[in-house]
Image (cartoon, rainbow, N blue to C red; front, side, top):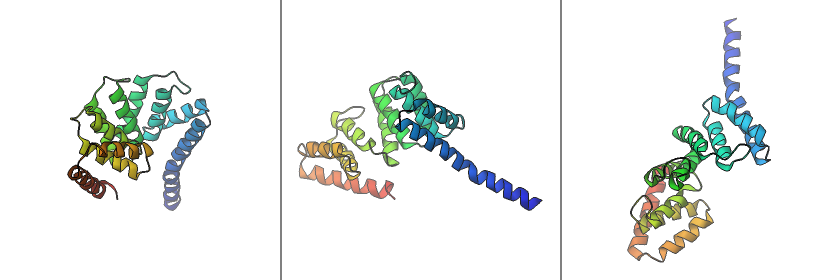
Length: 194
């Protein structure tokens, strides 16, 4: 009997993550097919379980007004919950809300903080977003070396916009600044890319 209970417990625990994964997959597939009603239902189930993927999904629905009224405050709430659990895409989108002042008071320093966390976890858009902030001096002192670094990191991920931005900022830099920026890229890669 003990063996049976252990086996049953193992099976239940072992299948729980896959059940949640299936809900996320179903919600994502529904979202991609513009079946926002199903996406909303699936993401709500996950969000109630404090699953950051479901919280991010709800944030995205409210951010885009897809199947629900567009509501940046609600998007902010869900992105923040997911971002606090380390969801990179939620961190990037939360940063964007801070940067734009949508659903929350504009706070460029908070935007930089969340973009950096997203970039550290591999979010595709965060490096270019950060580069733009440093290029324009939003939330930080304008810094071409730092902007170049972020644009170059984005370019390395395949972001064509980041590549164009890196080329643009490079025309405003001297060789020593470019060398310093490339050194920072290498240091960042060693620290965050495993």
